[in-house]
Image (tube, rainbow, N blue to C red; front, side, top):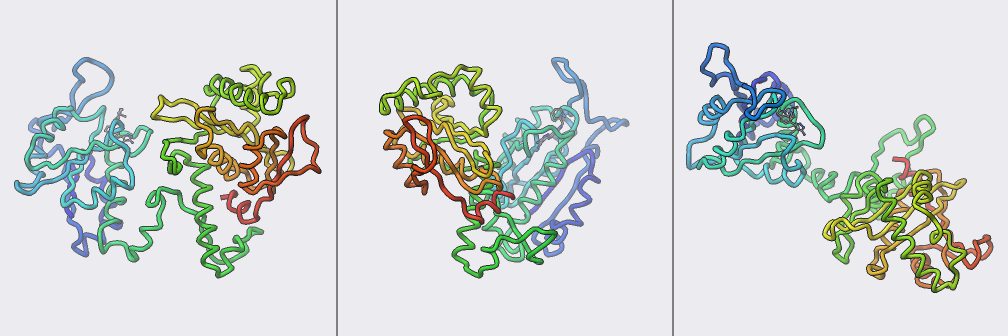
Length: 401
Ligand code: JD8
């Protein structure tokens, strides 16, 4: 693979020779060249920027030097290169894009500064025979001062995927974002450190249990930190679980009234159901007290179709307000919400507790299927029943990470 960088700060790429790319160059896997854009300026001040047409703050990078630089750096047809342009307005850089770029022969990074590069440079590049694609890409939703840092990060993510580069290719498979989940927590010797123990399952030698535990940890961590990464359920509906915000309060109030009207009918009890008597302020108030998640359907205008909340009471994770829009019930969303709220419980929680209407047989079935058991020995609100579930020690340890 060939990598070219065009920048007004060539020294920014000195680390390339040090890092992994350096080794790849030594092993002939990679050829790298860094080019100073000012090489292609024609005035004695080596000017690369000017004021923006249409006014506004800052300066814009002029097209002439860029055009000349790309003339020189792009390969001669029929060879082609991919022009990679880091920009905050680019498509998100992902592992999938890294894999895609790693499959290409030649990448040319155009590293902008100031307010950015005159758009005509990119529009013109897209028409050139020696350019197979102009990839405008963003490293993330924050603002940097230029494209160099992004180019370095993209380089590392791409080069390490090159065949024959990573010592043991197998380790590439198990990584975050490779299987769509975040990584499970990792441990090494000593098994006890400053009063912190390694999860016993990892010392068990039982590879089946270890694999299951790691999968559970990856799911739990992803659910807590990146619910947006979680795969849609088997029903294929693009449900996305996200932390609730105060902006959700109105829709939450509407949904809970719809859901608990059903409960009131099957349990023949309107007066005794708090969810039916709450105001918007009540919902806003409990949103501050409870850890709450909502489900929205992007393909349905982001409609709020489900929710669940949890809070720690003593050492029990108190689960409540499991809501599914009436028209979407029976498709597994309730189970998904129940799994999610269990995963995000803090390590202090040694058990889960919830209650539902004594006549809410569908709910009770779902909870029992999820491992909860009825607790007639625990006092329940009028016309309701309590169910609890013990939490495994490994689940608790894992939720620390
Ligand atoms: C390229 C100029 C600075 C950006 C005015 C600050 C990527 N994830 C990312 N955040 N920022 C960049 C990025 C920023 C750049 C350039 C990439 C070229 N700037 C500009 C617009 C607002 N200044 C990036 N990838």
